[in-house]
Image 1: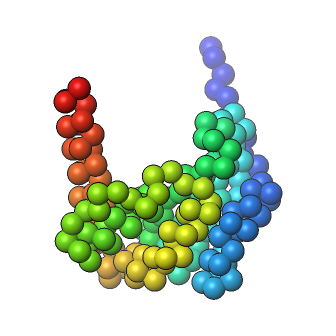
Image 2: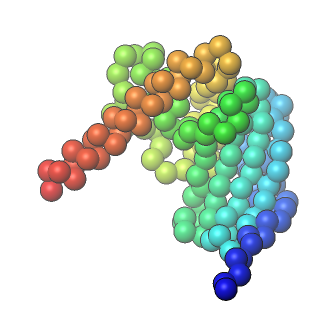
Image 3: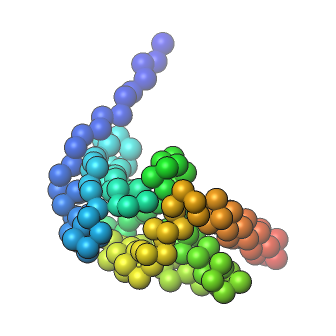
Length: 161
């Protein structure tokens, strides 16, 4: 019988400091809290930092499969802490709500911490409001529309090849 290998998770204060430094305005201006910063051995060295700020939970990830400066990020509302979505999808949903169309090009396709910081800083007030308990159902519906359109476009591209 094969024994299952458990993933070892350890605190990673250096990763936490890197994320805090890259998003310093979020901590200084919006009173964000770093909830945890961990590294998982055996899973491509996955590093995760979790931040709470107002109505938002932000998760920032890095693993060995990404270029050294790249990160991935997800946001969820505090009142629905498992409903994580890409911040770019949330930004595009805000644009859809404001202008009636899905933007043809997101501001950043791949993120560095600096790119994430810029996107969040430019849109924090709107994102925070959209992720409130009262407004989240609407933004969630728009995010779903964005993601469905994204997959439709990918399928269309592949069928044309």
